[in-house]
Length: 160
Image (cartoon, rainbow, N blue to C red; front, side):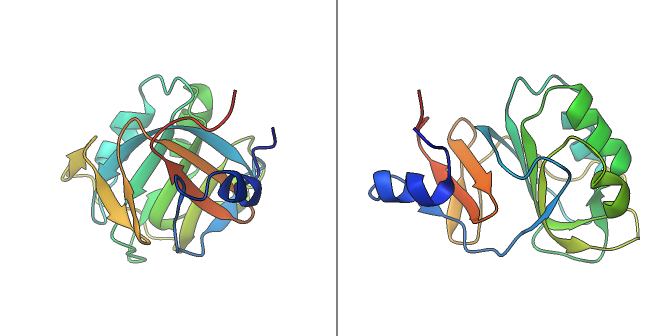
């Protein structure tokens, strides 16, 4: 079975929810999937760092930054943490920075855009709670699949 989001949508039309955000892709890994872990933050990435410092165990970190492009929630140092700690990928409903460096790394990140300004570091936000954007509710433990066509979510794993 292919893991292409288009094929998964065709095979599971009653299960899959499609995120309606036109994410940009960063890093050398353009497609990834895994169980969801969530953060909701606004212009603050201290909780992002804390999450990525822990073993990812093949999960996808979904960071709901409210779509803000005021401050970058992920940069090259956090991308390296994701790579080193076994995260499958990162979805950022907001901005990242250090995109040229990230594009040389074996990591997969989808984000709304870029900005050079780093985030605040006050550890304000919520961890592992359902969060919504792009017409989808991202619930910890559900499965996320991402590729060049977009991001989809299923309440369960869609592949063997």
